[in-house]
Amino acid sequence: SYELTQPRSVSVSPGQTASITCSGDQLGNKYACWYQQKPGQSPVLVIYQDNKRPSGIPERFSGSNSGNTATLTISGTQAIDEADYYCQAWDSGTEVFGGGTRLTVL
Amino acid sequence: QVQLQQSGPGLVKPSETLSLTCSVSNYSISRGYYWGWIRQPPSKGLEWIGSISHTGTTYNNPSLKSRVTISIETSKNLFSLKLTSVTAADTAVYYCARGRGWTADDAFDFWGQGTVITVSS
Image (cartoon, rainbow over the protein chains, first blue to last red):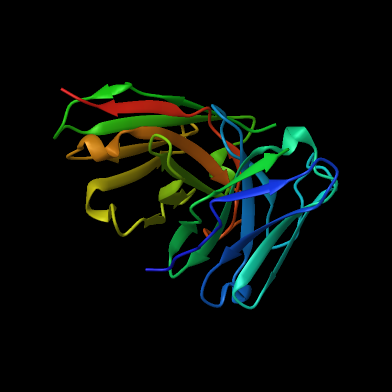
């Protein structure tokens, strides 16, 4: 079965750029999307189709996808961005989620 | 703004069937899109359970496939999940969500509030 691998945790200082990766076999040939989830809340879509932002998502969130790796980039990271982030892709009739990355802003 | 409201019992006994319903507001599900179920065990990541189109085409997670039934009732503007023969491993927060595209392979853009399901006798 297809797998997506994310780092368990990423730390960033306020105002700096955070990058969260998601790796999977030939992931660049699929669409990747990203969700933000804060404790006790439902996930929120922040990036879809590799690099598109839904309405209401700040411009500091961006995405890319090439080769075997999709990347979520948060520019000018703020304390409110501290959350778990999950990547997702579709493979052979199945939605697959990455294991999630805890972003800490310190 | 599309809204998804989940309902269902929070406690299910082992070996019984888990049943959840997701009622959709501000969008007629008969118009299209895919509708999915996702779960999250305590302190763990997201797991896709399955998705259904407005015409009833379904895709299910192979690891759960034989136990999962997802159905849709366009007249009531809702879709449902049934998971049979539950065990403690099925304890999780269950979410319903809307797929943002006209095919199953797209992101989920609107989510329900989540339902905590505990499997215990």
